[in-house]
Image 1 (cartoon, rainbow, N blue to C red):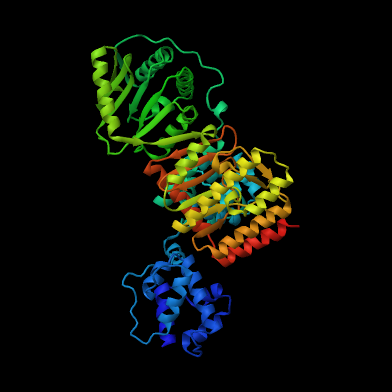
Image 2: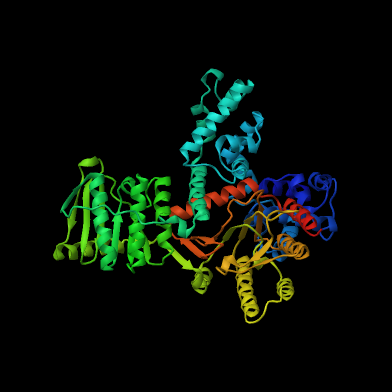
Length: 608
């Protein structure tokens, strides 16, 4: 009967002898003897204890503990409850009844759904053509580390058409030069005579919807990683051209003129601005000189004390939406922008633009989506009409929800309070082990070593206790997914303990021994906490930001001055980032045994 039940259990969990042996810490031959009935040990034997522990660890990793709980009729999925229930089920003599709705192990789902990513395709092409990262970076005139990130799947150059074209041309040219045209064509699923840069590009950039979401998320996150406030606005304000004060403006150039007039007056009058437009952003972003002028005028409004409410349209095509957000980032940091997003779907047949200065003026346009340059905008200054338009705008605002919250370093307490309110799974993408994974005793010794004086020492310990307490609460309530690229041995990158996750400008260099002890603490978490999942990356995707997904929002935290948390609340953007993080986990997550081996190797290298 034991053999029959083990076979049924394996069918339910989608596992084999090797899977369970890896987690049980024994040979697959031992598991095979139990499965075939060659051995029938007692329920209290060491071999059964090892077997059920292996089953539990496997189900934990594969996110199948609820399935195991249902099978064994356990009160919950904790180890203390589930292991005795599983042993009892294994030795029952009643008819075997499997759950009606069996789930698929996550590793099996990845195997069936996953196909080659951009990074894997590029890696195969580069190996085929005998190109080094340095050679390819020289051809493309980009940093060699970027090539490494492309090949590893950490980045993809989505939306960079110029780079995509250069990359495809370089691969085709290299293939022709070394006589590998037929091989490259076969790799791309093409015939040699049909091979071209377009063929290679189509193959490299053949994204699934999920990959495409992840690639768009990378563009947004990278723009935040590279964002420097004082460099993101024009160093000198471009000369403002003279505009004609008329009541009607025609086409794109007319809108640009009207906006110059509108913002110039707004910066002087210091009145609230109410903004909305669902038409394409070409009028603003299509001309670099005009965009610089627009940005400088907006910055002048903000620095003059103008407050701005804007309703964003996030139904825009991916990269257009990200470009619009990037244009607003320097202004978001001011704290004077309140961005919103519509909850309902807009009418795609018409475009609507309302740029309103309360009590002063309004640019108003409403025209067919296919209107082209025949569209026109009214510049309204009549008080009665402005009052009506403001009421209309407030009506639109009532159908919108907050799009973004911005917390500055000075409002770290507000950010921490916000995070505490969020429920559910937490996913982090970090550049180093977070403070909350270390024991308090280790932190105390580090503070003693650097001779941190009061009251800063007390503040740091209070911050740690708050972070650690939240971490423990999260482990009890749900899952904590930690994705990071820890510093290796002989590293050029400095190993630093930092509090950036709490928007605090404080970091301390580890000693080798302290770093090794922190790794040991993380290993203990991997071993003991079923809700703690660690994914190690070969390279760090970003240098200056850390990412946290608390609940249904995405927090992107700057790790340098000015310390800022951008909290995106919109479901479209959170799905983009969620897909990106899921792709990283799918590509690089390992079982707990392999993760512990990698950490142990890093610990020994670091402790030298």
